[in-house]
Image (cartoon, rainbow, N blue to C red; front, top):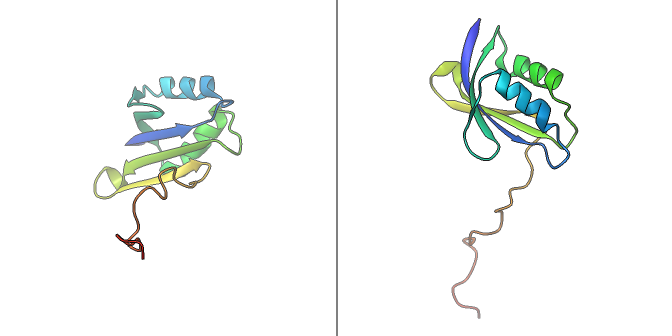
Length: 108
């Protein structure tokens, strides 16, 4: 059995199965790391993402708008990688705030 340190970020909206998620996190002795982020050590056989996805989907009632993202160091060393295990990426709320290089200092 392998063990991997992971961070889980979750957004289940206002109707999400938070009791199911919190039961799952508590059962895995997760540590709170701020709003909607938890750290834990996850035990798995071979496929971290696949096994984690299956485990969570069997424990939490997910709907099509729920999003869960996991971040970890590949093989507990090297590059930090991440993947959605539920849902997908959506438009960032900060898009459009930074000035673009095309903006003129003076209007002519």
